[in-house]
Length: 451
Image (tube, rainbow, N blue to C red; front, side, top):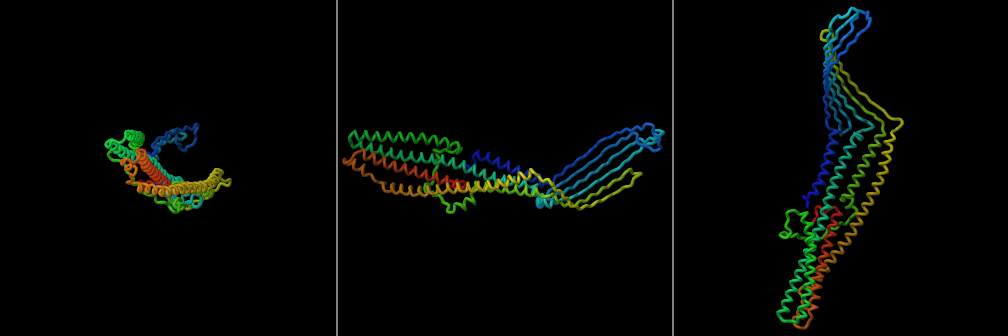
């Protein structure tokens, strides 16, 4: 059962949640590195009408653009801070044709470079402190993944419970068939004895009718067994049920839980799933509460600019700047959308409290009902076994009949009673084990306590 394809489909859902969770974590906390560049050519023409100055101006300009840049950012889970590192380099080349009032004067070439490097670190002190706002998506993804694990386990258990019910029905019909076959064999042996001792034809006819009745019952049970067997074969691949018949330990008894309330709170998946809902809701409430605060961030940064103009006319310069600052901003009109969601999730918290208690009460009530039925089932099985033990080896009516002092109908009645007792015992045992499976499934123990 564990390798059934049904479980593979459910496992895919869990894998999807894992991918989403890992993706959210990477989106938040991984290093983000981007590289950019630019190559271009700019041409510009200027014409000054009736220009009368001796000062040169650039009538024609051609500029080559060569730039490269890179940026690295990272956010930290520990405190919600963000680190940014950037570097830009520019190598422009400019050619100009200089004119004055007399016309063309000279060509001017400017070759320069500009290097900018900066690093900054920002720590939120109020809003988004500790990454409370930014980390919400990942935190919810973690809870969604845990919830999906419980969903997968629950799906497996529900599937196994359904298939075990089919298995018990198959066991039931198989065992009933054995009982009826034994009855048929005994009846046929009696019929042979009657015929050998030349007892009345009426007795032989009555016994044949009893045999026919048992054969009809056997055919009905075999038909039902085949139907259940087809269902089982669909689940148990490559298993020959005729060569390897399934078996059950009839003496297995359920381990009843004493403190149902405490056990359910600690171990029931449906309860844990509601607790996960509550955690997700509380996480959302914290986010919207924190979002009401002002943006108040501490930032430290350092920047270095290196540049050099035309090699023959401009000097090289280098500038370093350090900065530490506190930034504050707060919307005086508030945030209506944030207020709406905060109120919504606070009310939802109360809904989940009620949902939790209702589910807990329902599970405990169902468990108590099954506990009563299981205890009664044990008593019933004990009584059946006592009756069977007392009736074993009792062939009083058959002996009386063979001695010529009895009636064949009494013999048949005795066989009917014995068969009914055995069939009822099987029914009671199957009912007990179905309740045992229901109980273990309800208590989320079926995956480790099967048969």
